Length: 391
Image 1 (cartoon, helix red, strand yellow):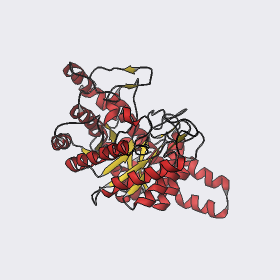
Image 2 (tube, helix red, strand yellow; image 1 turned 120 degrees about the horizontal axis):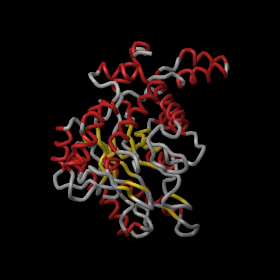
Image 3 (cartoon, helix red, strand yellow; image 1 turned 90 degrees about the vertical axis):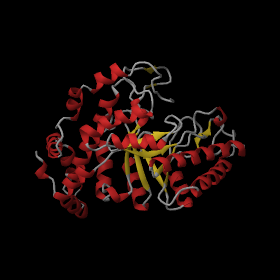
Image 4 (cartoon, helix red, strand yellow; image 1 turned 180 degrees about the vertical axis):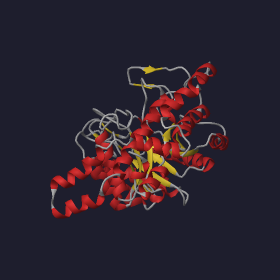
C-alpha cells in the first residue's frame, strides 16, 4: 500500500495530526515498589524538553510538551519556553498537582477545611502564571480527592465545595485559556472519587462555562467500559477537550498507547475521524500520559506516537460510503466488515511513504537509534539528581 490510496483529505489529516508529549515520561518511573533508574535520564525540565524534541525530530508529529507543576518548576519560564522553541517544540498543557502535599490527605479542592481548599486554588493560580509565561493555553486538572470509607465525609458536601473551588479557578482564566478537567474511576480513593466519571466532569464543565472541557484518559475507566461511546457523547456536546492516551490491562497502568488493545484505539480514532475532530481547529488535543518503567524513554514515546498514527491511518481508510449504506439498510455484517477491513489493513508502508514525503526517515525508531543521541546524553548527564516520578 502507498500514500496515494488515501483520499486527499485523509492524506492532509495524517500530515497535520499532532500529539502532545508529557515531560514526566522522560524521567525515571516505576511502581509503588520500585523506581528504576536509567542512564542519561534528564536532570531538569530543560533536559526533559531536549529529549522530547527528539521525538518530534523523527516523527514531525509531536511539537508540544506538557509540563507538570511543581515537578517542572524553574526560575525563568520564559527561558524554558525559549529553550523549547530553539528545539523545535512549544509548551503545551500545564498540569497541576494535588496529590503530593501532606495537607491534601483528606482532599484538596474538596477538603472540609477552607484553608486547605484555598491552598489548592492558589496552586492553580500559580499554574496560570506559568501558562502566561510559556504561552500555554490549557490548565489540566486531575483531582485525586475522594473517600475511602462510607460516612468519612458528605458526598454532596464535597461536590458543593468542588463546584465552589472550580469556580474560583475558572474566574481567573484569561480569555484564551481552557480548564481541562480529568476524571478517574478509582485511585487513590477507593470508596468514591470526587470526579469519578465523564458525567461528573461534564456536569462541572457545563456549570462553569464554555472554557471548561473534559479530558479523557483511556486508563481511567472500569473494565469493559465502552470508551468510544464516551468520546461520541462528549463530541456531541462540544466538550471533549483532550485525550490522555495510554494503555491498560488491569487498572491505570499507563502503558504505551495501543500496546494492550490496539483495536480499542482504532475504534476511538474512528469516532474522532467521523466527527471531524481530527482537524487542528477542532479543539481536541491528543496527548500522551504514560510512565515508562522498564523501557527506554525516548523510543517508548516514539513508539506511542507511531501507534496513534497507525490507528488514525486505519480510521481514515474506513469506506464511509459503504459503511453508511450498510447501516442504513440494516446490513449488520457489511457494516461491521467495513470497519474490520480498515482495521486489518497494514498501514505501515503507507506511513513510511508519508514520512519520506516529509523528508523524514521511514522508520523513526531506527533513525533515532542511529543518531547517537542516547550515547551522548549518557556520557554528558553525569552528576546531579535525575528527574523522576514526583521530581
